[in-house]
Image (cartoon, rainbow, N blue to C red; front, top):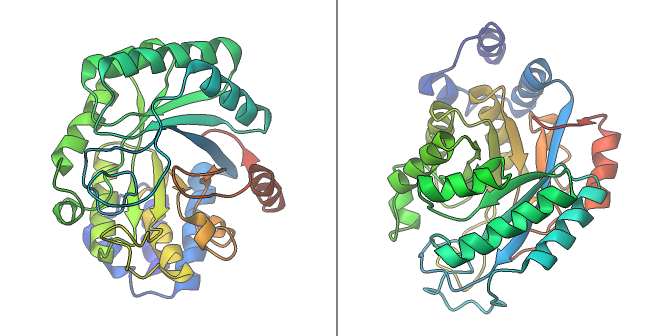
Length: 319
């Protein structure tokens, strides 16, 4: 069955939900091998690597149950306002010199206010003048007008995670909606920005939820798909959830590549929870990663990632 579905995809067929659901209980090794073959067919040996900086930390009004930055939960974290241009420019150049292809500035909060947006736009403009790194932004539920400002200063991609399925979303957040996410993604695309979107696995969702999210991402035409693994923080509502096993993560990303064969399936936050730091996932269809530290958790050292990517014989290039 795995081979039959894989061959249909190779011939241009888009699998539907029923096909993806049939893959859940298949042999993991065979599924991973087929997923990797799809990756090689559609994406070659390209490996897309990016880095993020936590551009503004804490005091977020939203109640996402997984997040340490929410004011709704008593998590002790360092809080600071939007980083200045000098700090962002220095970090962007550092990452570019390390071989990073894409640079994300991520900020806490539902969205940036106007003076913050003007400040970060000035920073993006300076980075573009001083570096060839590809610029990405993640600043919440911005309007079309605000997204056009980002586009005009050289931002090329906008990040806005769906987080989970439409069905499961109300269980993890009540201060904004799944539809708010969709509206922002479509506005970013209308502004001429590429979009990066997926979510977090390990939020107590079912595999069906993961599949539904991936299908929505496909319907939106998104080609950069960051897969985060929940890192349970005790003071958050999801602090007692069991961390996913390595094989559960491996199966999820393999099925994602059946649904999104042309996409960059990007291992993101929580990769450090996996013993091999994602190596086996990179042989199961995953062909992108976020390197360095995440937002409020540690990540993988860039030099270590570069060494692993070379050992796996990937070619560093943007997808």
